[in-house]
Image (cartoon, rainbow, N blue to C red; front, side, top):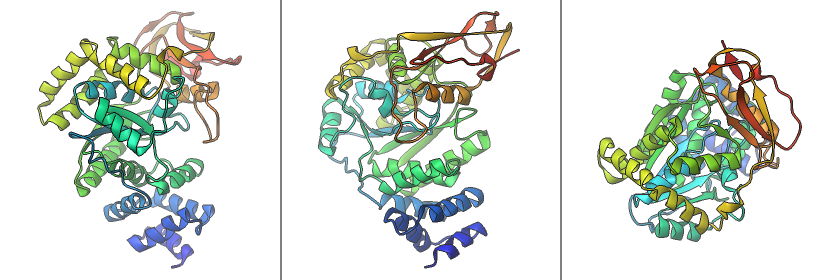
Length: 406
């Protein structure tokens, strides 16, 4: 096969066969295809898209590039959830304990953050001693024992996705619906769960900026799930404002615990919605029934107890959580109504503070971040604190870059 001919075929909006896709993608994993050649193909896919057959073929190639996790020794219907990413997204840290406290196995493999999107593994590593690298045996045993575990993605699970994801991130080819769908669904299917809930974010802080694109991605991922005989359900949720008030690793763990301890907020409502869908899927009961169970386990404190049990089981010391002692209050320079929170900008601010990474090699400062003090439609007086920055360095910012007050 000819590398340039395959690139040109996709550049000219042609359809690639499974053999051609395998030749290029597996060739890249094996080091036979160069970065610049794969970058050209990814850009052609980004611009011209793929049809469903091409996408299904690519998912299959990704899955078969490594191991498929066998979770058959875990008792019960196994559920998983995946968010397409956003700012302040600590939902897994809340939904996992809720679902597990109701006796439903929740085995989760998570990733690290890159760019403005935070990673669940980074958040958990703000807890001293927390083990995010469980062996397959430890992972399965923990889920059987306490119904809940979160670990980093194993080296052998979809290794092709890892190298392609890293290349996409530095070549401007992240925002491609076929490539996003292939990346997410290959990992979810290889991860072995029976029922999968997908949270497709839409808005300023999300990969999908429009409802039309979010629906396309959601429908496509549900079709891939059906193709692999998995029960997959997708929700489309808002990412025009951060999820919750806290952005940054230790700060987000603290907020997750606050929700589990009873704090009322739109974040709690979203977590109830997602947990209810998972319980409904696992127990084959109505959403109304599952929501009652979810609210009861939250209100009783059982979900919070499950979170503490989970942290202890993975050798974390929850008392070790720290935030930076140095803070900066960002105050409003004008009076009016808070009309818009610029979520993407806040996400990038948290990265610049040290809470995220621009490249995979960057070290994270778990203690820094942002706490929002005002919400959409709040009336703002001049001098009101809009947010507090937890920092390790001096920084000056213009509030107008992050908050629109009219």
